[in-house]
Image (cartoon, rainbow, N blue to C red; front, side, top):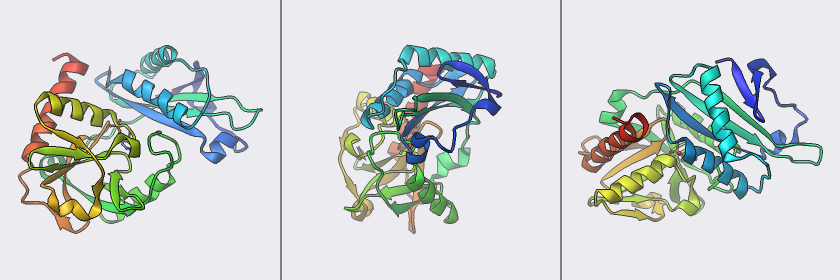
Length: 275
Ligand SMILES: Cc1ncc(COP(=O)(O)O)c(C=O)c1O
C-alpha cells in the first residue's frame, strides 16, 4: 500500500502531504468518503463517488473533478497498491483562498472486520449530545465524531448516538441509526443525517420485502417504546444494538434486525460478488 493519487497523479505515500499553511485544511473546508474493497471487489463505488461530489456541493466547495475520472483513479489505485481487502479514502480539500487549488487525494487504508459475536449478540452504544454542522455533507469537520467515539470507547461501547439540541437521536459517529416498532423500521430523515449508502440499501430492500419504513425524528425519550435497534455503515454493514447507555436489550429477539442482516448480506453478495 505505497501509492497515493493526488489530482489524478500517482505519487509516493511520503509525498502525500498537506501544508500547515493550507487554509482549507485549517478550516476543515473539505469532504471525504470511503469505498470498501473486499477480495478485490468494490462495494457500491458509484454511490460513494456521487456522495463525495454531493457533499462538496452542499458545503459549496468548487472543483473540476469528474465522477468518471475519480472512478478510473480508484481502479488505478487498486491495481498499483494491489488491494484485496481495504478501504479507499477520498479526501477533497477546497480552495479556501485565491492562492489555493482544490486537492483530491485517493489513498488506501486497512478495513475493519467486526466479530461474528457482535452480529449475533449486538453491541453497546452510548448517547452523546452534539450536532454536526451541515449534517447531510460528509464533511471533514470530525471533531464531534472524534470526541463522541472516544467517550464511547471509555464506556466499552462501539459507537455513540448523537443527540441534537432538541433531544432527537440523529445518527452514530460513523453510522446511521434504525429503530424497530411492531415490525416497522424507523430512521431519522435525510435532512438531519449523512445519507448512508447502507441506510439507502436497507430502506430499499426493506420496502421490497414489504417492511414499512418510516423516516422521522426519533426522540431520546421514546427509546423504550421501540423493540429493536441497529446501526448501519459501510464497514459494519448492519449491526444490532443490545445496549444503549444502561438500557440493556439482551433478551430482545431481534427478529426484524436479523431479517435485515440477512437481506443485506444477500443483496451485496449478488450485487458485489455476483453469487
Ligand atoms: C456521520 C455518518 N453517518 C452515517 C454514515 C454511514 O454511511 P455509509 O453507510 O455510507 O457508510 C457515516 C459513514 O460513512 C457517517 O460518517
